[in-house]
Image 1 (cartoon, rainbow, N blue to C red):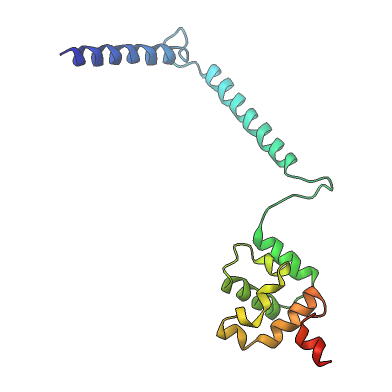
Image 2 (cartoon, rainbow, N blue to C red; image 1 turned 30 degrees about the vertical axis):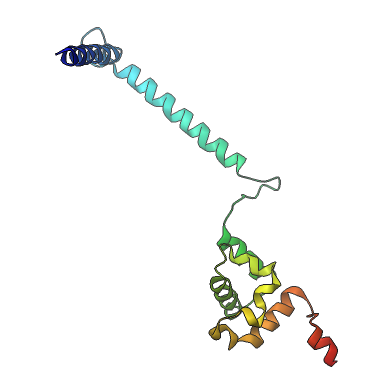
Length: 150
């Protein structure tokens, strides 16, 4: 019984608060005050627009170019910088996927991914192409087996 009284009192109190809040939007004539509603809506739109413009401005770097953090775009930019063709790009993507790299651009930084003992059988069939790519990206190979045979 006590719980019921407490719940009823809270319900009446909440209903009174909601009615009081809603009353702020009614004119003295009894209907909603559309002027106040329009002012609130316009203010909200201005705040949203200013926030959006501010976020766009902060997202640009010093050169005026837009900054972004996209693994795919970084990989594409690195491939473009190294002038790789479509087949070479696809091979590097396959290499990154085989090594389960979250960021495929790491193949441009870590030459150990090109080692033949760490390749899948399918990638081992293209080992010559991978070695050429490794040499293109990291320069001449300094493997003891190649320098000893020379």
